[in-house]
Image (cartoon, rainbow over all chains, first blue to last red):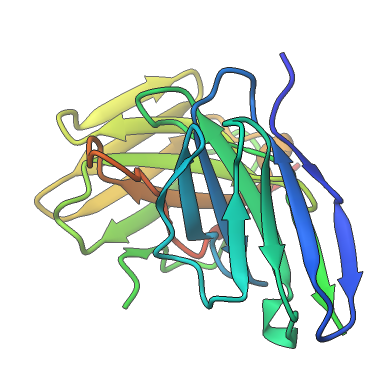
Amino acid sequence: GAGVSQSPRYKVAKRGQDVALRCDPISGHVSLFWYQQALGQGPEFLTYFQNEAQLDKSGLPSDRFFAERPEGSVSTLKIQRTQQEDSAVYLCASSSPGGQPQYFGPGTRLTVT
Amino acid sequence: DQQVKQNSPSLSVQEGRISILNCDYTNSMFDYFLWYKKYPAEGPTFLISISSIKDKNEDGRFTVFLNKSAKHLSLHIVPSQPGDSAVYFCAASRIGQGGSEKLVFGKGTKLTVNP
C-alpha cells in the first residue's frame, strides 16, 4: 500500500516568509508525528496527533511553529517568519493504534536564505 | 543531555562479514527500542524493534540484542551486503504513556559495506 507522503520535497524560503509543509499519513493510521532533523543529527520530536487531537506539542521550538490535523488525516506544519535556524529536514511519521513502529515519509528539506 | 547515544559515527566492514552497531541509553523509563535505516534524501525506514521484556529479536539477517542492566542495545547484520550501506539510527520510546509515544533518536552510525 501507499506509504507516508510529504510535500513539497524541497522548499526554499527567504527569511521572514511563512511556509506550510504537508503530510499524508498511511490510511487508517490514527497517530501522526512531526520530527525535525538537522544536518548530522538524528530526528527530534516536534509534535504528536491522535486523530485530530494534538496531544503533545512539547517539541515545538517556538510559537512560530504551528501544526494542525483538522480531519484526522492530512496534517500541516506551518512555520511563521522563518529564520535561518529553521533550515532542516522535516519528517512526518504515522503509526497504527498501539503506537509503534512509526513509518516515516521522505521528508521536506527546508532551506531558509 | 542526549538520552540515546550512538558513539560510533561510522563503521566500515567487508561484504559477507558481520556488522555490529551499538547504542546506549540513559533513561531507564524507555521500554521499546527500534532501529531505522536511512538512505540519502529518503526518510528513515523501520528495520527491527525490541521490547524491554525481551533480550533478543531476530528478523532474517538482522538481530537486535538488548542488555537492560547496561542500558545498551546492538544491531547485528549477518552477512553484510553492499546494499546495507546507509545511516542507521537507534531510537527509544515509552510504550503506553497514554499519549505521545514519541521516539528519541541517536545521532546515527554510517555503515559502509565494501564489496
